[in-house]
Amino acid sequence: MKLVSVVVPCYNEQEVLPMFYEEITKVTGKMSVDFPELEFEYLFINDGSKDNTLPILRSLADKDKRVRYISFSRNFGKESGMYAGLKNAKGDYVVVMDADLQHPPSFLPQMYSYVRDGEFDCATTRRVNRKGESKIRSWFAMKFYKIMNKISQTEIVDGAQDFRFMTRQMVDAILDMSEYNRFSKGIFSWVGFRTRYLPYENVERPAGTTSWSFWGLFKYSLEGIMAFSTAPLAISSLLGIISCIIAFILMIITVIKTIAFGEDVAGYPTTICVIFLLSGLQLFCTGILGQYLAKTYLETKKRPIYIAQETEEIYRARKQKAEEKASGEDTSDSEK
Image (cartoon, rainbow, N blue to C red; front, side, top):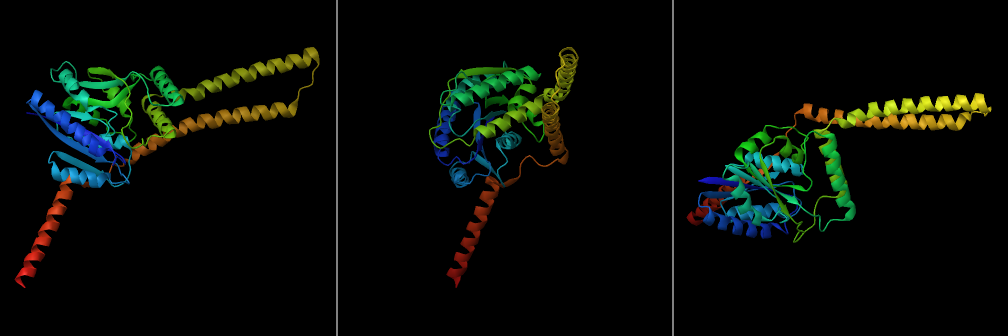
């Protein structure tokens, strides 16, 4: 038998979790018939949700022994959620997907068919359109992939999703990259392995709202650029060279205008412009260096990527202990 671990990061997903569970169990139930060698477990990662996500996971764990969950002590972010899921997954194959049903479970049989024969180590989806997204957000997303692929040696496919069906070998390779500042899209590409991309059209959430804001995605894109490219560090050198060239040209123009045409040199405006230009360039370059230094600082601290507060095992043990205590009290009362 082969175990498939379905890893599902969750953050405030109370509205879609029941729908997701119903859909995933329907699809995996059919797969168990079509592929009798498969068994499934569902590993949910509660990333510090503030709604009823955790009580729903407890309820699912009570009625289905295949359901496992890890609940964080606070919100650590989706990257930490995916890492925790991969690290705690027991399966021979591991699936990573979102709970909002924008990653259709109906793709799982096709994904498995590509991976099981050993032809591919990973099957993933690639969006062919961005239906439902704003034009500005789509435009920035496309530009990010273009810039990233130009300045980085790691190629990231435009539209590639975190929705992946992976072999244990690939998962172990990803876990070997235990860096604190994680950018999974880049990590998936960096580790290599043979990957099959399945095109699909964007699917909108059936309920709830996304936790990804434009600003959050922008910061996430900067994480990716700094994690897989040192090109921004070269900007300071390039700007320094350009500034020197511009200054040299301006000096020549000023000398020529003064000697040949007898024009007076405007001192105050020229000085102010030069000060603002050079100060801006210095601050910009210092900011780039500071970002890389900050990432290095966080890595050297060796802080944990996540902190687990509760799992289904802890919950079941606590519940059993409470039941035994209640049963003991009832027995004591009856004896009296």
